[in-house]
Image (cartoon, rainbow, N blue to C red):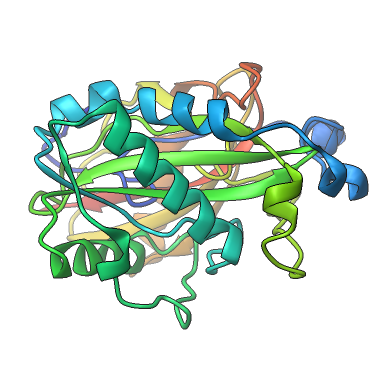
Length: 294
């Protein structure tokens, strides 16, 4: 989903240029640690096959791949919920790449063996610029015009996955992330003795747009009032299941006055809540960037 651009500000979220999230009061934090969002020790014993789920993930990409006019596609290794590489992430990417080759034979799906190793990659999941630069550089290195990136986390007896499609040559192009659930099969459990990353929480809330959690969508986003100076303010915001911004914190800002204006601006915004894999709303925390231009 493309986002509207305002003259005096821009709203961006992790690596896809999308807006926003949802959250609840701390008294309701138990929702984010409910059985649907918590990891289970017996998940490793699941014998469900993952092939149908991987194929469904591939089919969910039909619209964004068409919108992106994809010709040469690369699937990058999925990162764990903490923003780090993991053997399961490589396996998921391999399987998705194979499924895309079957589902979309007219698209040139680039051999993933051409990718350089990402064993030393570790990024802050909130640092959208660092993530975007890393992803675009790796996709460009193998001649892709479109890349598919993903992240995952063990949730109950499944792996929650979020997929994003982006054009390598257009940092402003973005499409709504796709989410899905892959059974945590014995095949996956046998890949490594390393623990599969659990759903990451910050201040008790999952991050929007990651690990099977969708992004909230801003439906009422009035621009900020005029400021006497230019600058960029990045906030961390929890948006409730009612679509209300809550627990707004300043993450980066050049000036206290700009911070105050940014906070007042976002307090007036309203959202369509984020959804988890089962279609139910969930409180999430997301970054919101407001750019002031004189």
